[in-house]
Every structure is written in structure tokens, then in C-alpha cells.
Image (cartoon, rainbow, N blue to C red; front, side, top):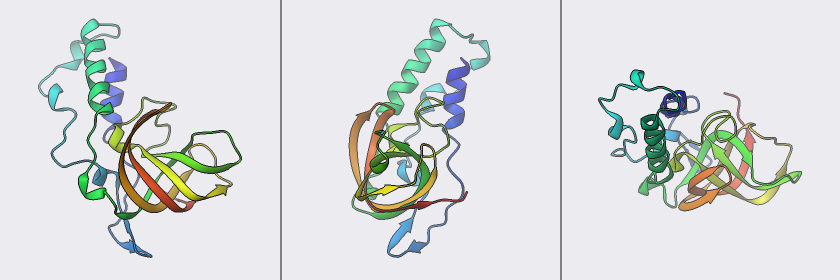
Length: 173
């Protein structure tokens, strides 16, 4: 039960406030821009009283599986296809090499490693033109590049987008 409540709570924790200004031809976007306006993963839970569920309750386990399934199938926002963006997030390397060329970008600290993964439309696979050094797991970063809708599974959760990155820089929330 606590896991289900934590998942629902994490859904509302995007990283900081970001304006919709332009930076060198790249639009600054927020994580909520990656979610279609008509998608509501909690719709199936409206009117439910979670206070009566206990950890280990089969109904809680069933609801958690249902939520995970909805999050893994989370739709991408079509308007993001081909858009040049700049997005803040937390870096999650996909390999252990010193230089990074491919990593996941997630909206909040600890996503995928200290808590369940967010919906697929809140996980972005970043593929850089050139590898970068000096970044570690969960470093806050800005990433600039061209967004594409992309479905994939990773060891850390379902991926809904790929960002063909051209620049990574430190983000100070």
C-alpha cells in the first residue's frame, strides 16, 4: 500500500520550475510538457479509499500492478516529435564507463534507483553526439537536443522518448 501511495505521490513531483523561453534555438520545456493533456494515469483510482488497504493486501498488489502497467504504456506527447528542446533532469548512466554517450534523464532525484520508475513518458533516453565526462549518477543536468518519440525498455524502466543530445551542462535547481 505504501508503495502505491508513493508512486502516486511521485507523479506530482516534477523537477523545479522552467520557463518556456528559448535558449540558442532550443525551447526550454518542463516534464509535464511530455505528458499528453488527456492522459490521466490515476483515473482508474478515482473514488477509491486507499486507507482501508494494508501492505500485502491482494487488492493493493493488484492495484499496484495495474498502475505499473499504465505507467509502462504511458503515451508520448505527439508535439514533441522533432522538437529542439532543453530539458532539466537527473542523469542515470546506462553503463559504467568514465565518459557518457548514452544515459537516461529522469524528472526527480532517485527515480528508478531509490523509488519505482516514473511513467514511460517521464523517462528520456539521451544519446549524445560526443561523449562527455565529469558527470555521475543522479547529477542534475540540462540536456539540449532534438526529441523523438521512442519506445524501449531499459534496466531502469520503460522509456518514452529519445533525445539526440548535443549538449549537457550542470543544472542548479
